[in-house]
Length: 474
Image (tube, rainbow, N blue to C red):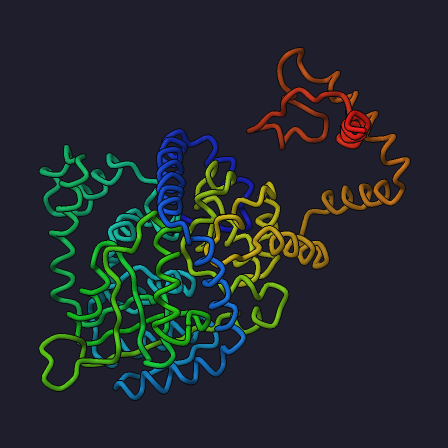
């Protein structure tokens, strides 16, 4: 199934009409939001930790070149190798070269958003290499030939019945799986199939939540343990990570872990927090013989020197999308690429170019919830607004939209005339609304009302209401 950010509008409309998707999103939305709220309430110092985590990420970005050099030295000292990739194509080539060097025919892969970003799986498959996703959610969508719809829960849009149907179609025991709909049974079936992948893989690929500069270690958090199996059983372990993931030491990692899990899944810590430092040493019975870290730039260095620099603080918890009303209504696939929700509204136009994602920055109500829940204090509404300006200046948005903004600017520069027009408009909208109901249609704006309506307008402007309130308080 193909999705594209340039088709955001049509994909969003299709998502709103998909009853199965809407039911899945409703269940997931309450789960993520409620669990985070409980986890935060149980930790009185959470806001202090957020401030500390934000400062840690900002400091790491300020010292990024130095920390990356220190990290590289640490990896080499531990017996590993570091590869630098300026863009997606170079990153794919590096991984392919490592796999070919070992005559790899099967790769066990853990969840990695960077791997999705660089299009790694299609490149490996085109080279004749069998790559198997071992995160349960990623494995499900790999069978469905779909991209992730959430960065933490990739298959959040799938029902258990859909998962059972996928297993029945792709696994050898189809006749035994047709009626399999219980979650424990489905998990056991996936475990049975994936166990053979872990045991036979020549190469394991994982992402990294953090890179530790002073030791050359990589830190990976999972709830399934598949990352550990991908990292220790194959002879070669490849870590894919964006250059922004580096932090000075494990001291900083410990703080970031406390806000990451609570923000992502509402847990104090994820089930597995694993630290990998180089390949197997002499006398050790387990671990890879080779340890490679591929550091991916792919636009990040340019972002570091831009007004979108704060986006690099992101620790990929998914809290912004969990609390976003737009994401909650349409899911991740509508955004058309790897990063959905508020984070994707900044990252996708930056990484792909504004001309390939002209509508994403406008899919926002500016309610500010994403900034309120971000564990590292990224001012997402400000960045989304800046992206709108960038796209407007690049002339990638629609001609009609630019015309509307020019007209609005003309009126807004004339306050008295603007106020008069707003009062006229407010009265007109009230007359259009159904008595005791809502405003469900409006000339020119029919597309906006296709999936939403407005409460009956009061017939007065906000400015007039505020004036009345101020007079009453005097």
